[in-house]
Image 1: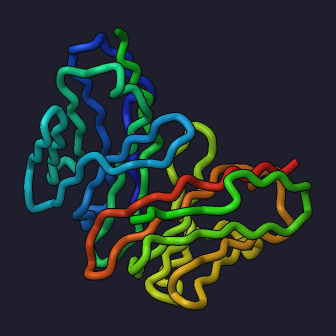
Image 2 (image 1 turned 45 degrees about the horizontal axis):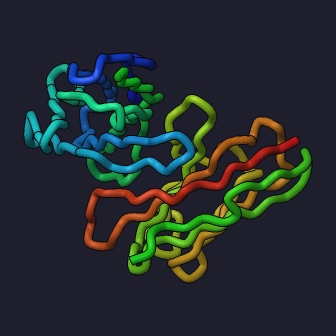
Length: 112
Length: 114
């Protein structure tokens, strides 16, 4: 079955710097990759997603890149702000299923 | 409109007891998921419903866990003979009909087994 690994587990950046979180997946049939932000004690919320037919997607300060050959995808946050501090989860879903496998999360701290 | 809701928000029980956790999905969402999230971990897939039927229950850890969705809307996750290792936040998510990919999560139920 699908396995998703996420790195790093914690990340501290200065306000205004960029943050990059990386995930790898095992199932080459995976074709949908969402990213979720979870603030302390709150529900995960989708922030961006990408499908396997594109290599990059941007939404303001957030971008996701996908390398299908290497089976990894990354979240990029530019001009980080203190409110970006949260736990971020990547996930993957294999083609033909609606089962989502999540990574173990990255705790991002943006230092003011 | 209203988002996914879950009740109770917190549940404390004793080892060996039976618990039921409830999920109310967004109206009209045909797909419903249950996940378990332990401290410091990502959501772990338990079961997925499409309508009333369990389309994939491969994540249920053992036969103490069972879930139903009899009318295709509200779902109940049932845990028998609870163990301390069952302590976690149980998240529910729903997804709209028409094959959309986005899941919308509920606030979760924090289960503590003493």
